[in-house]
Every structure is written in C-alpha cells, then in structure tokens.
Length: 68
Figure 1 (spheres, rainbow, N blue to C red):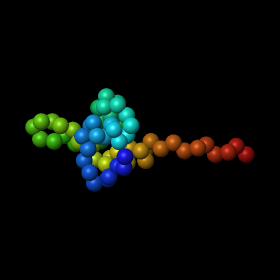
Figure 2 (cartoon, rainbow, N blue to C red):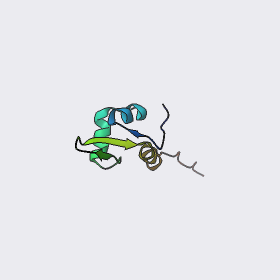
Figure 3 (cartoon, rainbow, N blue to C red):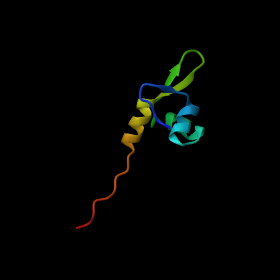
Figure 4 (cartoon, one colour):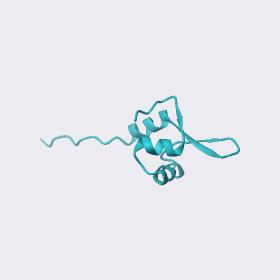
C-alpha cells in the first residue's frame, strides 16, 4: 500500500501500511521514534504519511562500503 504524505492515518492504518503490529506502532509512538498527533477529546492518535516517510528516511539501512 502506498503512503500518501498529506494523509493522516489511524494507528491501525499506519501499522498496516508499515507492515507492523498495532502494538509496535504504539510502542514507537510512546518512545517518540514515530510522531503522532492527538485529536480532540477522544484522544485518538493520527500519524501523518509524511511522518511515516520521515521515519523510514531516518531509519534507512545502507549497504557497507566494499573493503579495499
């Protein structure tokens, strides 16, 4: 599933798009590794697509340089 930067996702939708469990996404939010916004009195969390993409950019793994 594509992640749209200008869309806000529920925790469940974010977990599905990131191919993670809901509990893992909640833990990442608690640990401040993934940004989320709290909406209104219901205290429902939303994660922006831009924040999901930023998380991937910040946690990208790169191949090691070949030893010379």
